[in-house]
Image: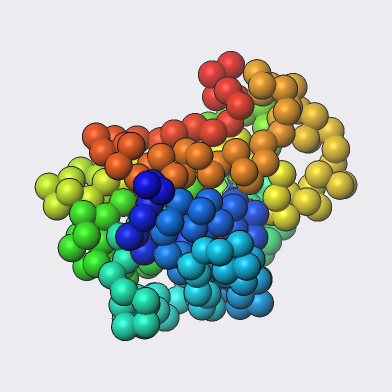
Amino acid sequence: MPLLQDHIAVVTGAGSGIGRAIAAGYAREGARVVVLDINEKAAAETAREIRDAGGKAESFALDVTKREACVAMARQVADKVGPVSILVNNAGIARRNGMLGAAEAVVQDWEDIIAINLTGVFNVTHAFLEPLRGAKGRIVNIGSIQSFLHLRTPSSPAYTASKHGVLGFTRALAAELGKDGVRVNAIGPGFIETPLNEKVRASNPELAKTFIAHTPLGRAGQPADIVGPAVFLASDLSAYVSGTIVMVDGGYRTV
Ligand SMILES: NC(=O)c1ccc[n+]([C@@H]2O[C@H](COP(=O)([O-])OP(=O)(O)OC[C@H]3O[C@@H](n4cnc5c(N)ncnc54)[C@H](O)[C@@H]3O)[C@@H](O)[C@H]2O)c1
């Protein structure tokens, strides 16, 4: 039997990259997938690809920074699709700017990154909490190697703080919701080739080389590399796993 049969899985930021791959992977394992993205067209495309491959999916536009819209979306999904048992908080942005740039830009980075990467995770989780508790659900948050500190590759204080926050939120929620049978875990991707870092890869190939030079497996990751761990954390295979982060980084963090 497929690993996620009879589950309804919500994936945020599923119009692209890692989220799109996870949504498709969950559908292949029998889940009915709710594809959410601020980019309505991209979300619809993911859902269409899943249906074309024989899976079950619908898509809706959602900006995770809009708290009331998240609450309304949870109601809409409950009415139109059914009770959600898996939530993947994947929507995110990255900017590699330090603290010493132009003040306005530094402040803007902080506000945008925290709003999407951290408050967005809170907004969507809070909105879907009731069905997730009812279903003894599973929450998978997308952290990063920046859920820990790495001086060798540049990040921004805002991105690093947001991904540390995602890990802290994951642990606190696992502690609080464990008694309801809800499991909460994170995935820490390393350097994964997606549209998120397309421009940086093109303009700064040295940065990609720096990442890969420090990656024991010696290559960049692909969105498909995240799918197995994401299926594992959403399925009964991980029935006694909660409050942890599974690094999917080619070994980056170990060296
Ligand atoms: N690519 C990497 O190397 C890497 C590494 C570590 C962590 N991550 C994390 O993985 C997640 C996915 O990244 P990706 O590389 O697939 O990026 P991506 O840019 O390919 O996809 C991100 C998706 O999120 C959506 N999104 C952005 N803001 C949103 C909002 N406010 N509301 C809803 N959706 C929104 C975008 O429209 C896009 O479809 C992010 O949280 C990112 O921080 C990525």
